[in-house]
Amino acid sequence: MIFEVKNGNFGYGKRKTTLRDISFSLRRDSILSILGPNGAGKTTLLKCMLGLLKWTSGDSYIEGVPVSGIEHRELWKRIGYVPQAKLSAFAYTVIEMTLLGRSAHLGLFEHPNDADREIAESCLDRIGISHLRDRLCSRISGGELQMALIARALATDPSILVLDEPESNLDFKNQLIVMDTIRSLRDDHHISSVVNTHYPEHALSISDSVIILRSDGTIISGNAKSVVTEENLEKAFGVNVKLHDITSASGNYTCVMPISIA
Image 1 (cartoon, one colour):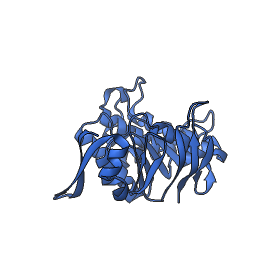
Image 2 (cartoon, helix red, strand yellow):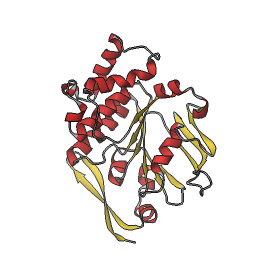
Image 3 (cartoon, one colour):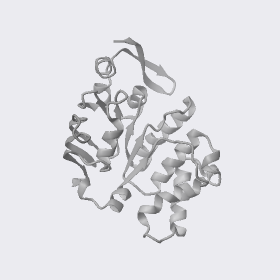
């Protein structure tokens, strides 16, 4: 396993426990999606996984080494983090944004060199946005900015990408571009991903495994098809749901339709 969480528990201060007995694993060359209702603690789970919040008990592990024991700079060489795309207030070009991903490999006062720039250029080329290299991040679309953030994460040369709602606020086409990119990074470049998403259809279409985080802080985890079921979605989200399989020229898909509040 490339990444694991074992018996993770977390709570804010003296408040009740937010996450309870969390255990799951991410295999090499695989995609894990996290689903759950608003307020269940999905972002908190990501932060605990990455060591940005400290587990009350339990720990996260990268290739068997506790995250809590890995030096900060070394950790961010192994993991690339992709936040939700928000309008950039800084006048970075796309290539400059991507170069920021090399920070974990540079000393305190060290500047990117030609090798770093070559890596950044190759990341833009890898995900098909080289044509945006000189555009300002404040002047590109939300979908283009999301791809630039993925390129920045790839510039760290990680073995794992962690993406927080990467398709939120994007139109259908840009959602598909982002999902296809995550799938391609797994299939063609052997980069595993953890994806926090609101879309069960996306989890089913790209994921090898899925976690559903429930309101009581516990999880259901396992193979995507066995976890994303009508029963599990109804219990987690409090809605009546129907799943329909669809066959098209490009493959087989599952449509998830919320019918009514349970």
